Length: 213
Image (cartoon, rainbow, N blue to C red; front, top):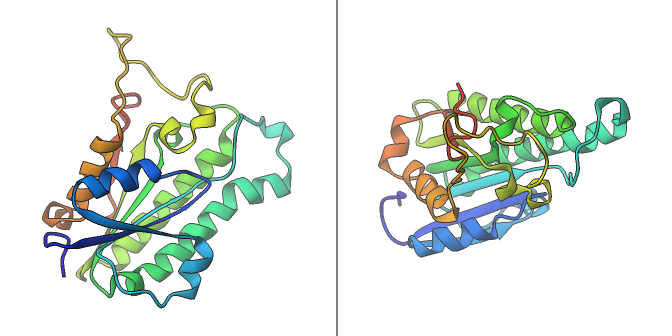
């Protein structure tokens, strides 16, 4: 079964971020969506799906200066999300039954960095690198893997008011970040025939905040 046929099944694996909005939006596009914890991923054994969506963020609710970041704090905030992503990507081929799409989500600001959120940026960029590495490993096979950078508040609402998480467009003060329906449409496209043309790519879907690169 491919992502272009019905029924289409997806599983969302998230730690530290609420993707209920994406589950609902994908459901409106005809996907049957389930969720798994990172512990359930390690257990395996479920029926194969067509799409794996993953998002692993630290439980950060406010910026933390570098000088105030302990080694344990760095391990929890930067390293643990990458370990969860590694576990997800290791398990993805089995979850997909050897065929399908993997899509990771992370905050767009990490492409540039913001004072006080170094650990979050490192976690996101480390995960994005893992996605690129696995995508290269899977080249020529039947699994595609890509990354979508979204507005930070979609993943971590507690950070919505942190300064410098957005870069307003020159000549306009109006910011219109994409909503759940638009992000779901991108995920849907990456899981279909269009996604076969991409491998390890980053789609920046933040409404034009950063325009990187």
